[in-house]
Length: 423
Image 1 (cartoon, rainbow, N blue to C red):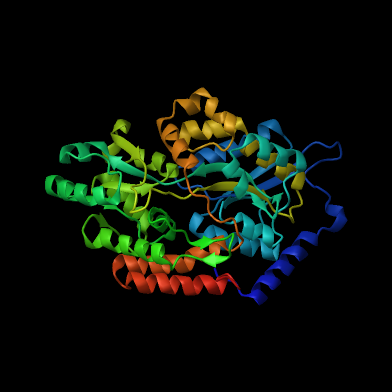
Image 2 (tube, rainbow, N blue to C red):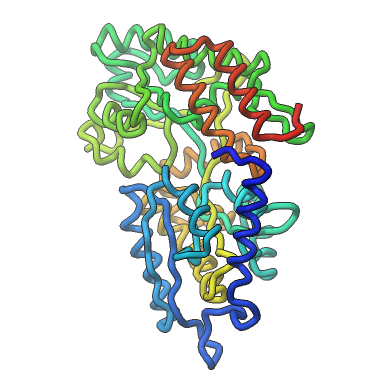
């Protein structure tokens, strides 16, 4: 995902060309002669298998409010989405009107001219009615380009029965986790923790736990390879080498979910998007058996990343009015409450947390305080591009293919190639 200067300029030029294709005759699009919303709005959604049916039904409900608008729902696998969206936007060919973007992608898409600014009245609502940390993810250079749909972070999922049988409590630190692992292994013969090793998002709690971060955006400094970064890579390797955790370098998410749902692992680190799928596992036919705790602390503190998804409108859309109205609908309090009730997803609208269906969701009530303490990532255009080289080095370190020191050094070198001029 790394871009050189020449490639960036070319993509930006293509994006601007695509935006200008319709010229003035495009107008805002999405309205008929009488000013009523009309036409087709194509939405590329990155929801997982457990979520997509609910989101498709909600999306298609927009037509009940606006009968002349047809919503075309397209589910795009999350792992393919960033590059697929970029390719569609840069060419202008078959591009969606609305995208569901990881919060780490928004600044990148906006910097390339791909996203239409959120209308002024809605932008004011984002600032006044949404969680401040969620609102921040949709901004670039002081302007709002996306509306927060859901917010999330990581927590420790645990099998209450397995931990009780082993006589241990949910570990509050990684040191406690290693001790608990011995008891769990001795009592059940199973692994304590499945730690995903093929996705660098799961590295973030480890580096935050050592008091570090990937970058210092304010001072334009790469920090992944400093002392805290090296400690984080060491921690990842130690968890696996000590037997406290198991991992897999390929298809880690599916393997992690399977191991936890079948009782092969007593714990995993995951987010609220995993709750619905986890309940489908044999171990959680009784939903009360699923426990959630804070991610165990490292040597410095406990820390988990702020995640989530925002909705943005393609700047080259011929249906901008309808597309922006669709985004407002999909991020409305009504829809967010429904998603919290059906999928345990966290709303981004502050007032939604006062609604009964949100208050009664045990999982939402756990994750909301965790989100309030989550570490905000650097909202820079290169944010998403950093994760690919980090994934490579994280996987090498956690599996023992590279030393922690070499992994940290290599990640730092790649980061500085991406972040031109950074120290």
